[in-house]
Image (cartoon, rainbow, N blue to C red; front, side, top):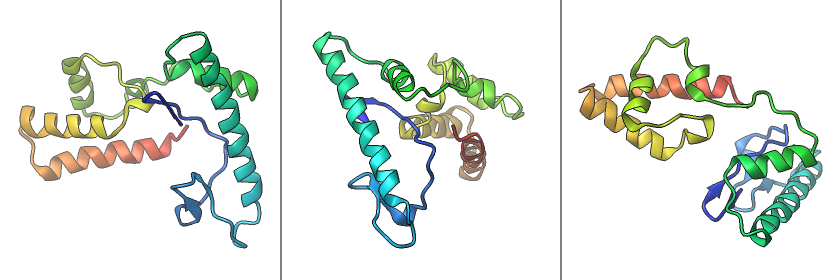
Amino acid sequence: MRFSNTRIVFSISERILLEYWDAGEQKAVSTKKIPDHGDINFNLEVLRKEAKKIFRLFIFDKRKPTPKLPKEELNKRFKKKLKSDTHCFLKFIEYYPEKFIDEYCKEKRINLEFNDITLDFYYGFTDYLLVSCNFSNNTVGKYINKIKRFMNEVAI
């Protein structure tokens, strides 16, 4: 979900294959292969309505929401417990021997969180590896694949 260029990610703990997902409508495709698509779409609609209510409250209070505030409110409303207070990417990826992510974050002065792993991060990090570290495309691809693999393993 987005609100005034603020991206909010909230899971309803349902998984669906990409081929059965309507990206334009942001809902499950109606098909016999997914008998509970109606439940999934209903849960998504309830989540959207609650998120809109929360965003309206922010507008009414003249507050600009950070990604954390609406998510905390959604967690309260759906009685969902957070796995961790912080989702610092670097704390989770510590066991990787590569120091380049940490060096990139120090150079850019950012505290990298899971929500920060976006295309902007991708372009900035690959540029850093190519230009500052003088790595080849294959080496850069190796590091990006490790990040992708790691992100898939720890999907929140």
